[in-house]
Image (tube, rainbow over all chains, first blue to last red; front, side, top):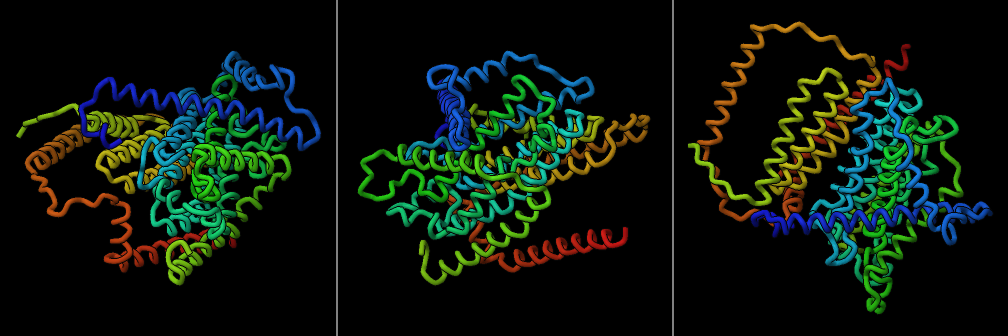
Length: 338
Length: 174
């Protein structure tokens, strides 16, 4: 990026940036389309039913049809809503979710921005989506939406703390917050990947990440049985589609981050296997994490509100801090990467 | 004094866009009537300022700014506003004398700042800036400035415990 920084701006550079962004958008939309399809299929199989199988061969076009329906739907805005904010909120939720994808390194040379504070960038921008959710709940002028928005903000702020703390151990071992350096640090056999020396951090990261994504068992902001649908009760049509899209893009981003921080990124499990391109290893690990998210959604019941906050502050945070101390001791006694 | 020599680099465009965004956010924050709108435009200013830090290659400061001011402070403000009443406040009567004085004061401040910035010389540091500035910030913070850092963390812990104690006392006597 630096080389575009100091040179005069031309249409060519702008075109390169535009093409890059469009390519990522295309990949992400493809991912979201088929993540929704596989989520419904996987949960269907786990619950001993078929899942979508009518639209297109094997139901492959089901999500396409759903999206088309959302786009053609009438766009309603409640009469007493705060119109400007009601319209702004879905866009505000989507923008940061797409921006966080800029720093993800898929391979050694396949990355848009090589930022030296990569992880911090993700955490900082995902906070903006929280604002958008609260604003959506408030602007709808509906008590269920407001409650959902409030819950969501409280939950996302509480779980951000253990999420950041759990990654501190990884940053200490790699000596950097740069995502590429973190992956390079994990080169070698699969026991060099961070999920074994940082097993406590990994566990805290997974729980906090599922909660950050507002997915079952932590989907209290959208608890259908108590809140109708949460902060997007009043939304329909393509505004609703935008909220869903940003939610699934965060699934994509968190799965990428989990792969990079704890599962060795594009490194193969054995150095002998490095004739297979790194992108394939990355995709395999990524798919495992996404499948894991679907799996727990299909099998675990939802938590109660009071238990949710207790879990973040009384269990995950002390565990994450203990993990930082243990990592510091380990580095002191055995040297880096011990 | 007024020699503006500009070459149209990416940095120039980024600076101008972000500076305009920061100013627009600040002006809107003063002019909106609904408190939630004000908080949001303030958040917009914070984000633009973070962008300016990125232009200055201070990524760490930039994203900590977004994390704390946008992610925490603004959400706290919005939370507080939502808990209070929903209707917008009535317009206050204008006070012409006060407004004129304020305008003169603002113009003077702008003049002083503009003169100071245009006449100041920014000497280049002797040693070249480090490549990875986040790493050097961390090293300085935990070696040279370790004691101030620890003092600040003690201060924060005291404030934290104090807040919990105050909240607890209110809970005890309903």
